[in-house]
Length: 142
Image (tube, rainbow, N blue to C red; front, side, top):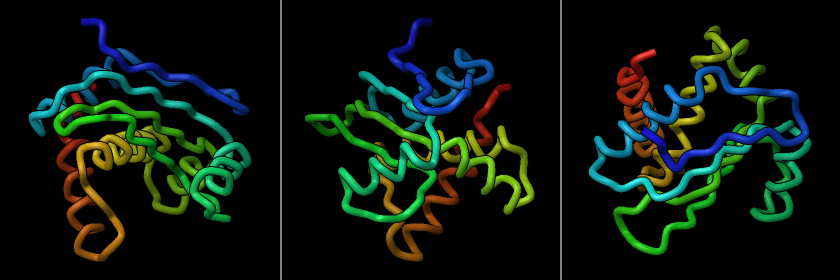
């Protein structure tokens, strides 16, 4: 199955382990929410690269682990670009006492959940997002 999900690196030496399995899992999560995957691009980058994007595009002068751009023109369609700081994921994994891969997968699916319509601005939204992340992580078959 050839899925319309691509993985790139910018400003950091990083290559995703088992990209085909990760793509299949992402697609499973999207299908679980009855939406259609059209196109998804992941860019793994450095803190500096993502910080510059955060300032330029969102006017936020802070470090973050992920920025998600929704490019879909209609409901029920998943089309977007997701930028993930490998530096942040590595630091957060250490701070949270989890593995790098587990934290990376949580962040990868966090972006998808935003595209699926989940928010994380309020405490209630954040709790629902965490529950959705955990549910999505449980769907991994690798």
